[in-house]
Length: 385
Length: 156
Image (cartoon, one colour):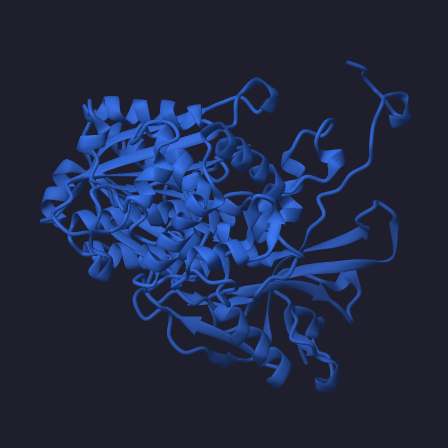
């Protein structure tokens, strides 16, 4: 397969409620990505749009709705959707558009406008659960994830204090992100003192609902060498779906993330991920999910991610910086855009363009991961320079 | 599998809905468009400084070349019937008391147009190419909606 590069990235601010429409947000991010690569819409051969449930924006056929702002006028265009995993799946779709040899330059745009959804996007989430066994109970994502968090904590003997360190770290990192919604200097006690939503999940354990968009430009090697002196290469991609039957899997470990990661590591020729991955942007809609995913990504032993965090290994200046962007907990969580924001962060970090967020040293390879659907999809992208 | 199941009570069912409502921002370009209608009883259009494409309703950006569009300009709320239909049934399929004409109206001096109702005209007299003008609600009744335009009617 042909080599694929990322040559540009852009994103909007992530905010609770944007005045801009979804297509307007998409245009801001897409235009910034093209400008950063010194390209125009004429250079784009095809467009990939990523956006999670139509119910958030309140527009059916959201891909068609967003297309004009995503640069898809008179171009081949596809909208991908794997729930929360979408933001890292869209660059995978962009990758195979180019790797196949069909297109030289592809614009990948992810958008979410969750503020449209009233009284709260939870209303849309209710109907993703099983109609017979779960929906009559009125499930919402907070207590569903609380079940997973409790299982994870109990199996490994991890405390809420240890998990809260993730929220403290990511919200602090986000203070250095010009697009962040919830950057803050907080203590573990602040997290523990925030209101209990569904034990063991407190308000500050959770990312916010957000509006925003992000975009990247992907292209073939011959184009990358012409338009960029610092292309970042897609070294590996992986995606995987586990069963939606809760009763048939153990929530304490995200096997679907492991399989997606193994696929990406194999493609990248990575034998020892703990040595060969230098920065990580795992999906962190809840603080415990960062730990859960680091384990699924095989970047530490099961149950050991909390120790890495406590030891400072995952700080921006640690041995394995995790969510140097500030993550979903700090930058914000416009679902699909949040995932692609992580890929943008790798692009900026690997090029040494992350400003105040720049991790020390010269990271050569980074991994972004997202997760979603009914907590059973894993998507992974590895970029390197 | 039961085919032609006309009474849902014959199998075990339960009623449900997706319990969300939506509040849509009209956006940057939409704000300029609806303010002009509400505050001045006017339409506004915008051109692309890059490729010249003209938009009514206005857009924040040009979808064809991605340039940011310029300042909106006011235009006469008049145009030409580009195509039309005459609706005889409502959404539930019930006959309408009076057939309703819906037209796509190209707005003069712009690159765009609006789908809207036609009024003050017998459906049999409507034809493609017919010149029409917008009828606005009195200023005090306007809410900043496309329905501040009551309909289009034959041009005076």
